[in-house]
Length: 94
Image (cartoon, rainbow, N blue to C red):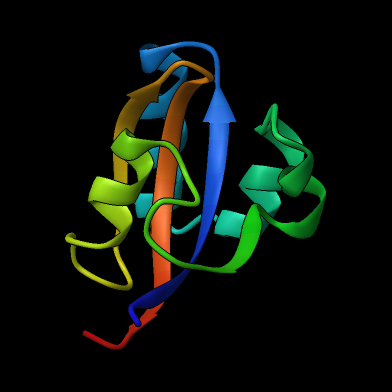
């Protein structure tokens, strides 16, 4: 069974998402940016979502988490909730 761990930042606009991505790529701490900006309750935990399997998150989110490169910040990823920056922290299984 494939499992992954990820953290994310959820904001309302694509422009806001891109601005935060730029800050993180410039050296800002992902967890601190999440705590200060994310609309998701996970923000207070640095955006950490814990470990999950395919199908537990919305499709757009799953596609990134189970296919994109681990350890990089991906996004903006648009879902019905808003725009996400997603950092895949681990992925195991096949």
